Image (cartoon, rainbow, N blue to C red; front, top):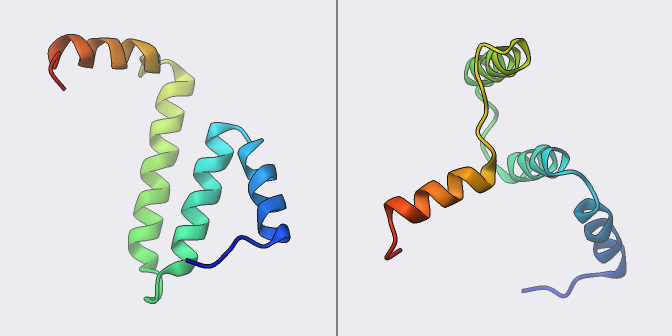
Length: 82
């Protein structure tokens, strides 16, 4: 594996200071840039519409989110040996 250059190290430090949502978006774009295949525009449009719908559901109150700590606690209770 190649050594991290000072420039990449600086970018990484800045990326780690981003919010979780911003890091998620950044990771998605970076991973997408590694794909050797052209993007499937129909699939991208479908995913974008699904994301928009889900965000609208949350913002409107139609869907209630569960805090991450609660999800982890419930999983630990359901699967105590894992």
